[in-house]
Length: 400
Image (tube, one colour):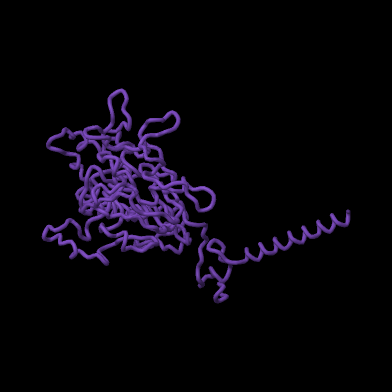
């Protein structure tokens, strides 16, 4: 018996040694975070005075307000009834690379911060770029409504600080993404002790301390993030159900707990009904609401349905779903579906390469538009009181 146990212990010990040796062999392979002291291609040493420099790298830095969205396969397209008969987002299976997205919509306080810094850097309030960055506050104005208080107060009054910025065109949103990229990366480089280029250019990506660009999400990324189907997954690659909205079920009210019966998004409930009745307000918002006002979806993203629609990167085409790639799809321009097919110049259509998709539904929209698969479009230099935006960013250095 003792010999048996001794033999068993010896076998287990040998197996442990083999596993440890195997782990050691694997750990000797260079990685992005541990590239070793010399090149595996040339044998030349890294980081010598006159040699190739390989800075330390611990992974992509965490960007402010960003949430990680694990990529994968999903069915893009509208699960809602096509009541307008547009047939412009038929269901199709695609795959999306992992990426990051803002937890919230960009708020008034974020835009005022932006205006403050570009005023300092671009010749004051009379500077051309500063003037081009001002939101159009007249989007609230109406000849037949008393919305003057929103025109005068919505952007700058402190009580509206964490309400989503509106009156922003697609072009202005793209400019903001560029400024945010430069500002965040300058601070990251400063904190890491990396000197910015003398000519004010971009801090090299090779330093490993800066982030990829903030930008508008593609339509596919936005829709994938809004559906957040990780919340319906079980076992291996099984999902219990799809989603009509960014939450489970066909209802718009919370079915659980103390919040049972309250609406899960800010939208227009019916003709003339924006919030319910006094003393029992339900969604509680006649116009927009604070960017954290409603429960987040399973990715941790707030207001992916309602509050404000959101700009995405894509140029609008009604048949994008049948044209674009099935890996990381996007439509940048009229490739395969040119402007000439739509005759905008002769008022045959509103479609050309300057109209951009927006998604998500708003405080002024009925529930139909809350479904992530629905889509609309607007000129990229236009703005309304119902469209805002949030930023996205690639997850670099991974194939997931």
